[in-house]
Length: 363
Image 1 (spheres, rainbow, N blue to C red):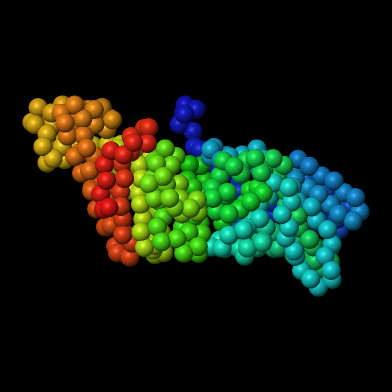
Image 2 (cartoon, rainbow, N blue to C red; image 1 turned 90 degrees about the vertical axis):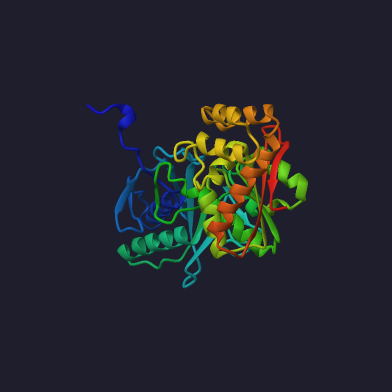
């Protein structure tokens, strides 16, 4: 028998898919007076998926339906959120109009795939909703003219834990999804936010962006350079997602800021810095230490270190901590430049856990 730990990770559904299901159910109720429950919608891959309703309301002039988002086994901050849609009739021939209700954001900054002033309902969810409403309208020989207002109760508070404030999306969450499906631990939403952050920075003509592995290094780097908030990219472990996008969408200057351990892995050529997907190589770090003056004894001790932090303690004790951190920064910069393949200059800053600068390359 397979253990619980070995079971396949369960997939979930995006806010876009939940909004589509809610919209289809509400439109059906507006036209017929009845809410289909469950409501089935077609995803972009052609599959039909049922959704149970968690909210319904009908007052004659409008109908509301809601679906609770199930993100499966993905650690999504919107898991468990109620995605509601209110449908009202639009002017004949006007088609579908989208509005942001409570908890759904509004775009205030250029660079996103939506115009400034638009509700943060991304293009593919809009197309999914339009297709679902068209199918309902066709079944009842009715026009697909509707005003679609999407709300997520508590969405404004949840959005503070996302990249939306930095991207210039105010007032709440975005309605997202390209396939309708959330793949557990795919980290697609994080990489998506990195890409949109770069788009926003480029649209604002940011000459320099700072990409950091964590908040401590981000704050320290921002204090050094004084860049605006929109020029900060929360890279996390996804150096590859950042660098590969910048290769096609360059900016003049990139600053990579992070802790010693993460950047040691980048220096070793890893582009995914998560502990489950890349490993710190103490032997290679020991070789680097020897190149900057470590004695054979110190290098041997470092080669058996259990972590990059432990190796750095040994190097610092031997008086080569700064030289080693500079060498790690130089190696990380070389990896970044090789991945970028031109178009963007790179500086790398290595910080400790308190935000103190340990090493630097490319200044």
